[in-house]
Amino acid sequence: MAGRTVTRADLCEAVYQKVGLSRTESAALVEMVLAEIGDCLERGETVKLSSFGSFVVRDKGQRVGRNPKSGQEVPIPPRRVMVFKPSNILKSRINGEEEETTPAKRKASA
Image (cartoon, rainbow, N blue to C red; front, top):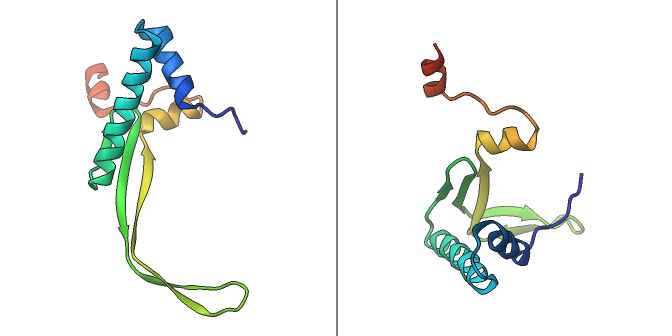
């Protein structure tokens, strides 16, 4: 199930091939988009990309963990974590299913 890993360079090359910008402009565009997403997440904002998914920052409270070797309880400090929630459209694409119909599409076809 392990596929190849897509890198920044791969994304830049895809933009270069599909959009027609120069390689330098393509790389700058990819870097700007990734930097903006990173800045938004750093500020605690949710980044929602329609038909793709959402990057969400969540606050985790302090909790007690356990050292597996000694069994001793260890406090785990509060922290922020980022999670990615894929859209239903992306989930369907990954699973090779047809695109799900939305309520608006169901009404239009009725």
